[in-house]
Amino acid sequence: MSGMKTTMLLAALTALFMALGYTLGGSGGAVIALLVAAGMNLFTFWNADRIVLSMHGAREVDAQSAPDFYDLVRDLAQRAALPMPRVYIIDQDAPNAFATGRNPDNAAVAATTGLLSMLSRDEVAGVMAHELGHVKNRDTLIMTMVATIAGAISMLANFGLFFRSGDREGHGNMIASLLAVIVAPFAAMIVQMAISRTREYGADRAGAEISGNPHALASALSKIAGQAQRIPNPVAERNPAAAQLYIVPTHVSELFSTHPATEKRIAALQDMAAEMGAPTIGRMTERPRASALSPVAAAPTATPPATPTAAQPRRRSALDPHGR
Image 1 (cartoon, helix red, strand yellow):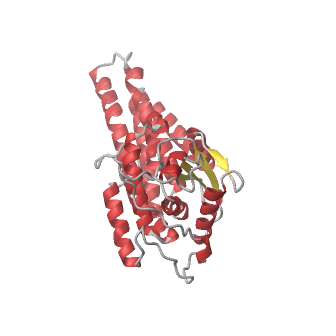
Image 2 (spheres, rainbow, N blue to C red):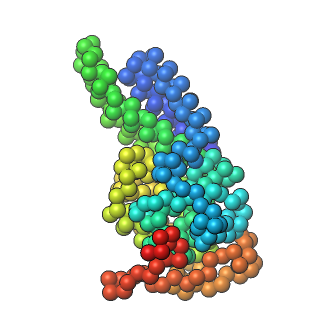
Image 3 (cartoon, helix red, strand yellow):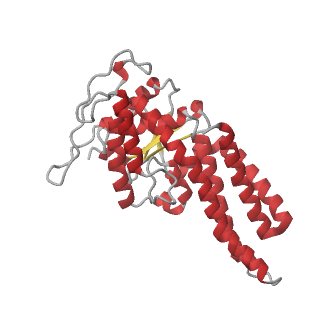
């Protein structure tokens, strides 16, 4: 997605915010909404990472507190030719991960303890490479800004009927308020989908190139998708707009999801693996030193076990911070 199209989509969200303000407060409401939208854009530009990380209660880790996970991210960042991002762990059972920050020099990546305990090392590498793909493609700022503005639109629309309830000018105002409450969040969601779906495919491709193993990322997506629907995510429940930040959203539907269907993403990664001649997840081999991303020594080389079944107990992940 081009920078111009992204700018137009952000402008559309701001216009929606203004239209909702006009519906609820006339021309004065539109001006206030414009000022609020401009202030939100400016604030999120400088504080996007802090907003998202504090929302999730993330704790920063380093080479001493989480050596395996930190070293994995460092190696992947070197392979992607990116500055080392800040690394965070979220104490949450729901398996997921995200990246945030206004640019690669101020980026942060985070993963939940549920994800680290569920996946093999190579699958975790695929997931974090996907997040670094967002950083490399400069998606993180726009995704956080869209989530913030879309959340504000939904919040303002929810107050629409409350503010209009004492207005006795006629049914027209009530109809306008109903339209504001129903249409504005829906339109904001459409813009979110237009931004996020394209970017997820791009981050999948970038992540597969960084990690060198599309099959590992595909396997991770398959495992995360099922568990993300089953295990509650309190942050996403409080703020649904935050779901677009995750590698797999918490409540997926083909029509309203901010992400493409997981099956389509897995199919695209499998096609990419065939193009690259990549090994299957159960039969990883050493990548050649001619890789443009990084020396082989920086790549995760552990061979993961086959996907566990009901008769086969799951082995503990080497990156599990709780040793489960």
